[in-house]
Length: 188
Ligand code: SF4
Image 1 (tube, rainbow, N blue to C red):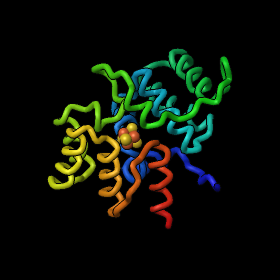
Image 2 (cartoon, rainbow, N blue to C red):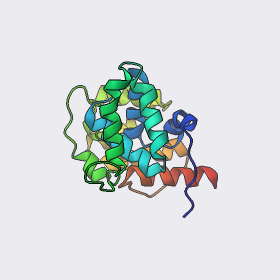
Image 3 (cartoon, rainbow, N blue to C red):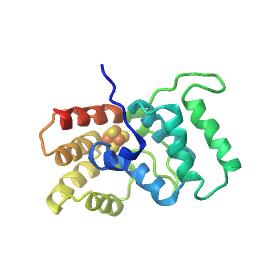
Image 4 (tube, rainbow, N blue to C red):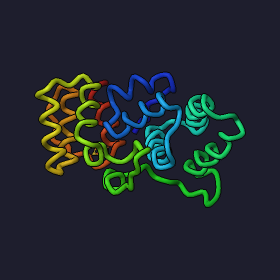
């Protein structure tokens, strides 16, 4: 399979068009706060790795944001985490991007943006996110209903269908599969 080269200046656009909501939320929070808690860093960093972003681009991406609120020395620790995730430090394991199942099981605190938004977000906040995506009332309520019923992957599938203006019978089990499907859809 040919992996498409993705450059850093495409990420803002891709977050709108091709990220599942869990990753869009993390990307947006990182751009806004120039920070994510540990769980968010790992979840998003692994997703970027799964997208095929190189280690050096990934470091540049996080450094540009984090060094808006901390100095280079403080960033060093985060750089280590990124290199670790890419299998370049410590046990040098090739960590795989999290599956939806893994993300759904995340422990979430009040300052966290990771996890699956369809499961963890307060209903009002989820609805605001969907409004921010440009979804109309009917579209929002279809997703909200699935989310309230505990049908998180169906809610994610509905989100995909609205974003891509199509019908799709995938029940997404992996954020990178969502992303790859979207890229295929948009280039076909
Ligand atoms: Fe992300 Fe999976 Fe939740 Fe979709 S179902 S938002 S891909 S964790």
